Amino acid sequence: MTLSELRYSWYVLHTRSRFENVVNEGLIKKSMEVFLPKVQVRSKRRDRKVMIRVPLFPGYLFVKTNLEPVEHLEIVKTVGVVRLIGNKEGPVSVPSDTIDSLKIMVKGDNTVTTGTRFRKGDRVIVVHGPFAGVMGTFARYRGKGRVIVDIEALGQYAGVEVSEEDIEILPGILS
Image 1: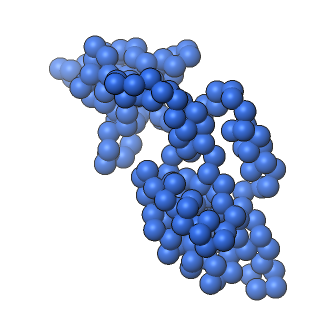
Image 2: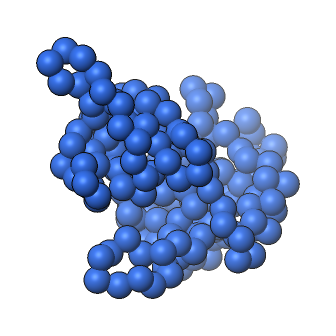
Image 3: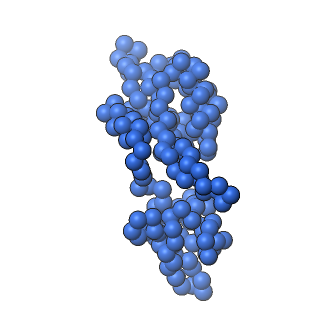
């Protein structure tokens, strides 16, 4: 691709864990167009029940750039940036229509959910409720906010139904 062919498009930017806001602010300070979709959720802390705004896609945000080498370098040098998402040919752009749709979705007060929080086979740990501390394998979604976690004991599996909010992916373990 030559410099004359470069045009501005949206790209997905992968960030370090919980660095979405840091990267967002860093790119804004560099006068770049950035979009960090956030949704309102109830805080999971036991001592308070407040509504907080969290990233819709944890670990990711969108940046509009023409991938000019100098600008590309400025993006990846920003504190907290891991990489631009793409394939072997380079970063892959996201259609502007998709970004516009996301902006409309997060603007309202409606609940927005994503369907890829857990995948079959993910190693998880139950962090709240009567099964707190139990480790298992995510099996499937079951109804609104409910999931099935398989727990292995004595070479056999037992499935337990828990709230989706009560489990987390075990850090450092890839499925």
